[in-house]
Amino acid sequence: MIHTIQLTGANTIGGLVLALVVPTMMIAFGAYVGVLMALQSFFDAQSWQEATADSEQ
Image 1: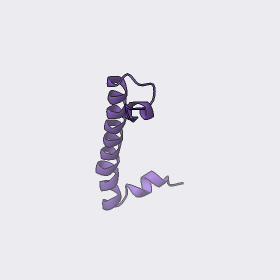
Image 2 (image 1 turned 135 degrees about the horizontal axis):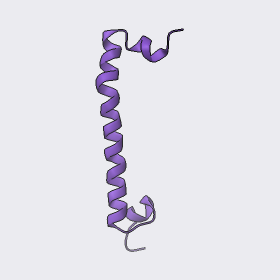
Image 3 (image 1 turned 120 degrees about the vertical axis):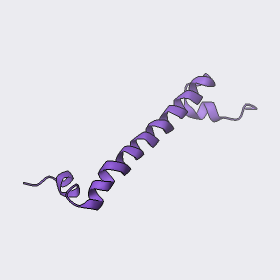
């Protein structure tokens, strides 16, 4: 039985995707979540909606 990830990594394009695109997407997602958490902490908000809410309300 051949696993899908082994089959994908068998050709050149699949190996390139596994080696470059997947880690890049993981880093980008982690940075996005980190920025959201930092902004939430900076504005002392309990949620992202509260941090971005208009201050006149």
